[in-house]
Image 1 (cartoon, one colour):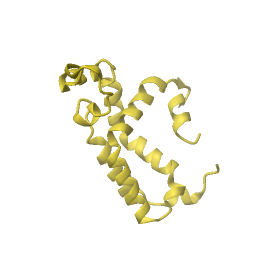
Image 2 (spheres, rainbow, N blue to C red):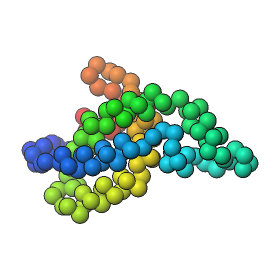
Image 3 (cartoon, rainbow, N blue to C red):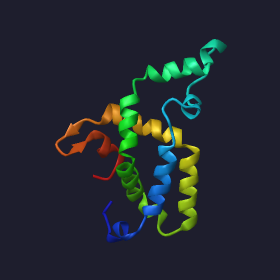
Image 4 (cartoon, helix red, strand yellow):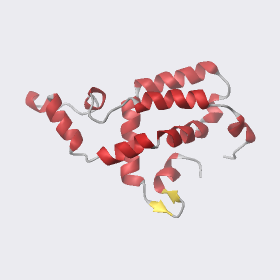
Length: 135
């Protein structure tokens, strides 16, 4: 896919800020993230305290903090990467923000996972960026 001036001319600052605000509200140890965990067979294994332990056992604290710290850059790149689908349709942008809000914990955990396991650097590029964005 070829980059066009149309992709970089558009002012998406408000959209980027809205998405960033939704994602930044997610905490690693939170009801939203606990809800993503599979239910275990024994009720005592499904308590909030146990689920918090399962989340901590993933060792994603550092990567999650790094992802949150880089949300400006990540969200900007993601929006620019999908910009051709948005055009100037206000309804599409509102639908995107709504979808992000409904799935913010999943998105943050996915970005954290990618950061943790695919942030392997090759010169100026990382595998994560090659997977997520247009090179």
